[in-house]
Amino acid sequence: MGSAAHTYTGATALHSGVLRFATLKNGGENSSIGASQEFAQNWIWDGGCWEYTGGNTSTNRSAKVYQNTIFNISSGATVTMTGTLEGTGGVTVKGGQISVGSTSFFGYEGPTRLENGGSIYLSTTEISKVGLGKSSQLILAGGKLSTKGESNNYETYSFPIHAESGTYSYFAPNRNCSINNVVTGDGIIEYQIPYVREYICKSWDGFTGKLIARGMSSSSDGSQLMLYNGIGIPNAVVELRGNTRVICWKAAATYYLGGLSGASGTYLSGASKNTRNTTMTWIVGGANTDETFWGVIDNRCSAANYDCTTHIQKVGTGDWRLAGTSIYSGSTTVNGGRLVVNGSLTGNGAIAVNNGGTLCGKGSVKGRVTVNNGGKVAVGDTLFNKSDVFTLNGGLNLLNGGIIQVPLYRKQILNNAARIKFAANSTLNGTLELDMTDVTIDIPNNSSFTVFTFAPGVTLSGSISAVEPAEPSETQEWDLSELFTTGKIYVREKGYTALPQVSVVPVSEQYFSLEGLPLGMEPPYTGSPALFIVKKKYQDGSVRIEKVMVY
Image 1: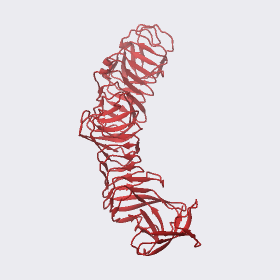
Image 2 (image 1 turned 135 degrees about the vertical axis):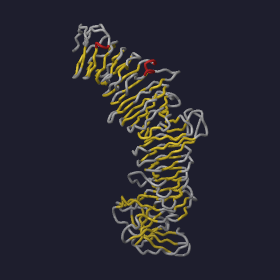
Image 3 (image 1 turned 90 degrees about the horizontal axis):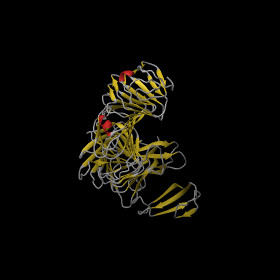
Image 4 (image 1 turned 180 degrees about the horizontal axis):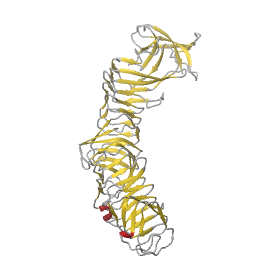
């Protein structure tokens, strides 16, 4: 049809193929699709694609929609439509935007599909209250729906939303609304949060994609992802951006998040508003993905100055990395996968690690850790780093069947290990698991790895029931005699018998070169690793002579 201003007054119908046109006017005005009156029977949508190539325009034309039909608007252009689309078919919007200017616009019964940049804007409060009218479903396939609203009252959106696989779409409602949409699909939805009173009230159980919750509000309370549907978002990953704060509106609730990631400046918080002394439990990880949360987990409710007690449960098979400083005061339970604390948990709440779960990282936790049968506590993340230290400020109860794991490293001349630091008295009765992945050369007899460190005055009790692997090599064995006092585990020749001694700490040490030249009472540092002989005298008068590496 091109850009010509046609004068014919009959109907224009499309059944298949693509019809390109550059002008679109009100009914009765000359345009690329003629000058017929605005009545629906004069514009027939029966399949195919209407491809509008012009710029911003408006029309009061209505249309009959018999089959699913595409309206492809030139990118960046807005078509304001004040008529009604009616019929049994569906409408796909691509490229540009339809600004809906009529409460009766959605008179068709089929789905509304937004793809490849196509968007719809509900331009008035009254239109937003109608939502998608008779349209059966909103399909997000790379498009955007945004709405106009008001500050004093609430709109309610109830049309089903489906996020198509492999697409990134947007939902941007105005402030103050009830989001009663049932959401399904496995695409990505970016939800642009305008304020703090937008309530998610219906099921997201069928949504297995990713919700990107982007905070857009300048409110001092942040932009709140307000969950009020009885369960949360159990099977999808939630990613927080901007100043988003996740809140549950129901007091004393247990809600699920399939996974949680987020940037610094975002929050996972508590329950309700003007409520104190209630509880909030978040169960995170059911989507079985690996996520990193740089934000803060706290006790705050929706309103400032009101706190609850937030509890965390980690489930699923994935890794959940907590990289920020979290201050929640409730308990932490690891029931599955890995809870990787690379930041810090500063609350006093107890930490329990159950069968199938692992607590690990290179940060610190304040609460006392209990590792039950089948659970594991470990130092580090994925790649070995000899400087990694996992600090247990509240101490550790390692019960029978529990595992404490430390990675060892020997690819060059030196022995190295990441370390677990005990900052409170602890009891160890389970298995010591030594990760030998990065031990690729032989370990010399009588050399050691430092796997534990201690704050001043801290003691360990209990008895390690087993070491895995059971021996360093076929000709060697582990020596745990100093594990609970110096944090060292030694490698000895099989059949090694320790010298009797009153104390494992020598009263004096004298160093010699390998040729026997005396070098003094302090370790001789040469700037590079070197072997020396050390003569150790003990309280009972016994003497031990060892070859040691100084570096």
